[in-house]
Image (cartoon, rainbow, N blue to C red):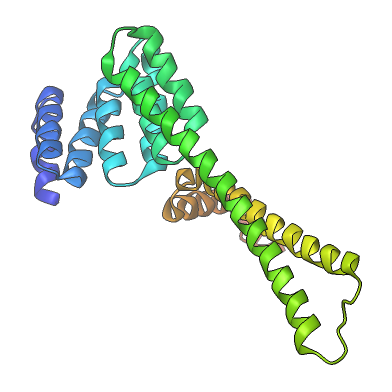
Length: 242
């Protein structure tokens, strides 16, 4: 890695970008990130470099870092469709389908005849519809299972016990409906948990959070002042140290 860094220092921005692109083609995404990062240090306003590094980070499943670079690409060049495309790709990988569709749509506004963008929007819309149907099916399945379990308990209680707890038909139905409601609540909770987990991969990496925390702690630690006796203070005053 040190040798790679030394070689990077003697290369131009274009050479580093081409080297990174070559690494991406070969699947060496970590090395590609190194080349792109060195190029960005030399040319920090080059939006293409941020776009390329965003793609490399995405391939490494570093969604947070990939989104940061995609947003920086958009900030540096808001009229470039590929920046919004990069952002949409990260959002889609993080299951933020609504946000991804908006980003794809923004890219499509800049390149109306781009077939890849049209296909991406269609595929993502289909995935979103499929996810919604899956969530609805989960709720109904849990509800039906709860109702069936309720009926089974009522029948077992009625036929296999000497003194059934539920004897009135209305109480039997009410008990079965109550378990169906419990099943619905479980299914609904499951879908909500799935919705809450969307975008979780966009949280900052733990090591990045810990570094920021340490920096904040260091910034808030007051400087310790050395205490001197009166005699020492007078001597330091005479020598101009106070």
